[in-house]
Amino acid sequence: LFLPRIFIAAWIREVMAGTPSASSSSSSSSPRRRDPYWFMYAAGGLGEMAACVFSHPLDVVKVRCQLKGELSGAKVPAGLANVFRTLSSIARAEGVSHFGRSGLYYGLSASLGRQAVFSTLRHGTYNVARDQRPDMNLLQQIVVAICIGGVSAFVANPCDVTLVRMQADGHWPKGSRRGYSGLFDGLRRTAAEEGIVTLWRGCTPTVLRACLVTAAQLPSYGLAKSWLLSSGHFADSTGTHFLASTCSGLVATVVTCPVDVVKTRIMNMQKSIVGAAIYTSPLDCVWQTVRTEGPLGLYKGFGPTFVRQTPHTILLWMFQEQILRFLRDRRIAEQV
Image (cartoon, rainbow, N blue to C red; front, side, top):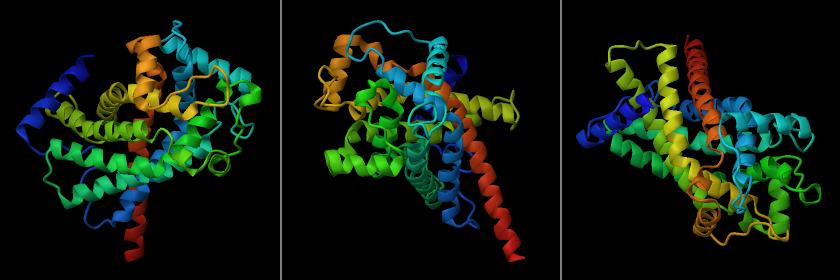
């Protein structure tokens, strides 16, 4: 906990000082003016999509852990051992492939669709804003990230609803499973069976979570990296990037986990099943969860969330760098 504690203290000092912060990475810093802005949108979306191919099984585990013991008050196992136990259990019972309508990769199409919309918008627009205002201090960057993250999440919410339902399907009894064949089947059936408005169910916690994760993830990586380099003990190397990404992942997980739990439970609920948890609003979900499971109920799935988010963040920046390099090289080659 030493590095995150020092990192947070440095963050507070920088906000109070009102000075510009370092970039979150070369892909989330002010884009080079020779780069078309669409490079930033393409790198952001494709980078996240590539990362989620690797992190999707842990995202499924996170959703299942968030739903364990829902409103029962029963003590649910936590920690990394539970993460791998749940991972193994799903793999044995449901398999791995996406195409069997169950398993660790079920919902991958929805995950890719969500990243194609949400991440393309948030990374691209954030980088355009940074390019337009390169002198923004950290507080201003956080405000911009909050606004961009919220709008992007609202647009992508239908994909998020489908994603959560597909990932959580194995949580339900076989007769109550939705069995979507993919993203578009989920969107079509949800709109036809429950109304188009249902595609924006859970929008409030989704938008709030996106505001928090964007504000925590994008600026925090740059600040962590800047502090590590300025300490004199670290070089601009892969190891430094790994530590900075870990700090960024930890901050994002701590900030967003309660909202993520609320979002998952609201999107997953089925009113037609007798005895299933029913929530009238996000605040009602928070109240019922805390009342029956205690405050730590809002941090269910913290282990898999952190285990998933940190590698995802590291892979995200690495893929973005390579995609940007590829696009720049092709553009230079075409100009020769």
